[in-house]
Amino acid sequence: MSGHHLILGELSDFITGETIKDTHDERYRQKIACLLVNQKGYLKKDIEPHRKLVAKAGDCKAIVRIDFVIQLSGKMCMLIKFGPGSIVTRRRSALAASRIITSYQIPIAVVTNGEDAEILEGTSGKVLSQGLLSIPSRSELKRIAGKNHFKSIPKNRAEIESRIIYCYEVDGSCPCDDDICKL
Image 1 (cartoon, rainbow, N blue to C red):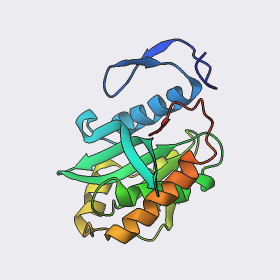
Image 2: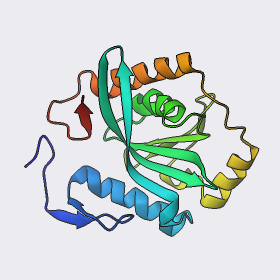
Image 3: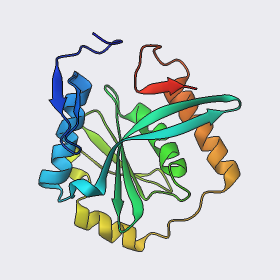
Image 4: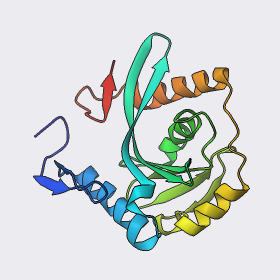
């Protein structure tokens, strides 16, 4: 047993093929990865799992994990943030991540608990749809990205968004949570 996650053994990561710890949360992540490839038409090379993101709040820094980042035509177009429990509580953190994981606003942010999902428009935060099956397909995301301007995020806005991620993901997190690394 590691931290507060029950280790059930090992499994092979669907996207990378790497051997990873088999936990209840990881089983949901693998379910999402399979959905993206097998039902939504993404290529494994479009999907970057376990993307690390540095969050800062003043002198405090930590690395948080973004479960999946989808890149099409050289642009990050969608990120997916998994977390058990209520997905509505994860909206703001996912939107903040969509604003600092790269220098421009990512068009789509998805929050999911593995059973349900909310698809958010990156700029406004508006809930576009609900449900795992409403995650945009590869062709839908290409269409969305084609209409997007990928606007740059001003430095002061990025600092605020980074503080938001730190607040939601790091402050008060369990010390044994291995998805977060305080620096």
